Image (tube, rainbow, N blue to C red; front, side, top):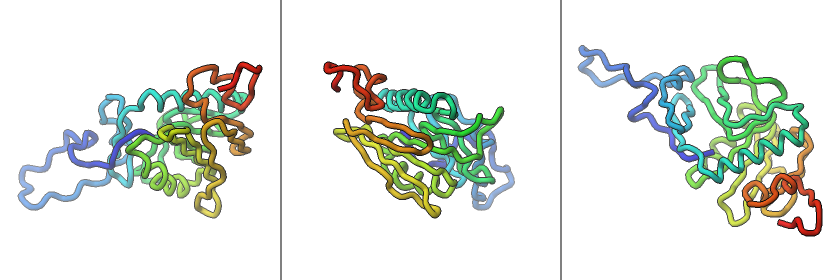
Amino acid sequence: MTTGKPSNPGNPARHGHPRSSDDSGPSAPEPPLTVDDLEHTPDDGRRYELVDGRLDVSAAPGSVHMRVANRLSTHLNNACGGEYEIGENPGINLDSARTSHRIPDVVVFDGAPPARGYTDVPPLLAVEIISPESIFRDSSTKRAEYAGFGIPSYWIINPLAERIGLLELRLEQGGYRDAAMVSGDAVFRTEAPFPVTLVPHWLTASGPWLRHIGGERTGPGDGP
């Protein structure tokens, strides 16, 4: 996920709601924001999420982030043969009050998205791509949120390290356990949510990534 911190000051989702002129006492606390308030956020390329009714604003994804998300989505679509719904940046409501709302970088669903609005159904897989300011959020905050929401598999991809890494988490008894961790040229293999092999190196490297991202090599001159 890209950068950002929960914030309320200067809340763009609450503009246009002045206090009453006869309210001379202490200001009442603002009610929690809901997904409906996100309709009033600016279309400025940033991401607007909700954490317990508070706005969490993230900077627009950078070029490496976008490359990783695009290549991963393409590879997952190829791996499943179009039998699953692969999406980038979908809005997901994590609670019935619609005060917690996240936008994972990549997701896998086993059915079509809703015709309108945001989904409130856990995807089979959620993926977050780390940025410098999102390390704690992606590895701790969202780990707890996604486990509580019931997402069976959660991948955290770190393109900031010297060798790009991938951590696979599996849901067990309400919490995530580390299932696999690979980096660089090592081959990642999983059966969840469907059989996938993936070489993290080719999520960012220049060259014939589409031929090699699944671990296949077509000839003696095709090394990374």
